[in-house]
Image 1 (cartoon, one colour):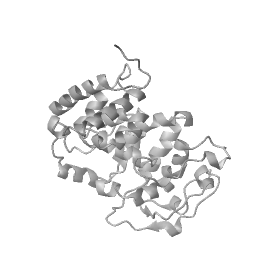
Image 2 (cartoon, rainbow, N blue to C red):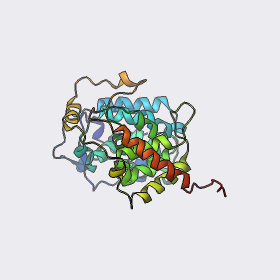
Image 3 (cartoon, rainbow, N blue to C red):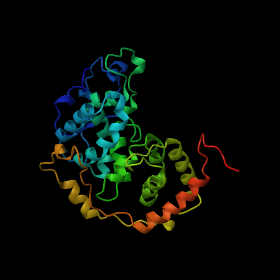
Image 4 (tube, rainbow, N blue to C red):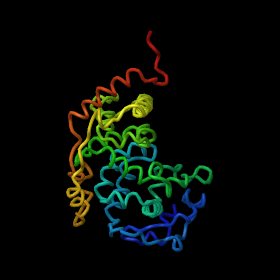
Length: 292
């Protein structure tokens, strides 16, 4: 496998890549290189984020999980990536940054979304959107933003739980209702979970609930049902500024902590749980038999 695009393999801090970059099927497959020199750009306001902690995490994810288990690695990698890459929301909203990371971390992107090593058919290559696409499709942006949406203050456990269900990643996460924290957290609570509470296995239920909640949001003001609080901006800025000696190896077997900018009010989450439970009861779950 060819590895990252050159000269990104030599970079130690985060940068940007322009939207004019084009990826060949051979690069996406890993059978040919890509010179990205002409596409590297300066990103206004981007601070010098170190890439070594991210490299450590990607290598560990690919070592801990087989490629057949790649989807299961999301729950492990997401919170740790968020803690290691302490982006502001403004930085994380810049697609040039994620294009850089998708090409810099090309081996991971191919491992997560491409075919097994040795595949020679370019038609089987990971899609371009996984390297340079939107935050809902990009291999790393989707993880970082999922954690940003589903964490509860410094507690990453809800985000790790959400990442165990690919239908939450591919559906609920892409809806505007996921930005209302009491709704996002309540959704995780009302969906069926595994016996140990660490996995949400019901993809059909997750899709049905997302559609029902999204429809309800067109007639209800969710923040009136379950009002959220203003986040503590100073706490977020303090978390973003911590750059010294973050060793991701310390958190291989325990969750790190996110920004301590405030948890969603418990009473608001409970109110949304009541509403979502009612919606879940009446939701059309594909494959579920109706009861007269």
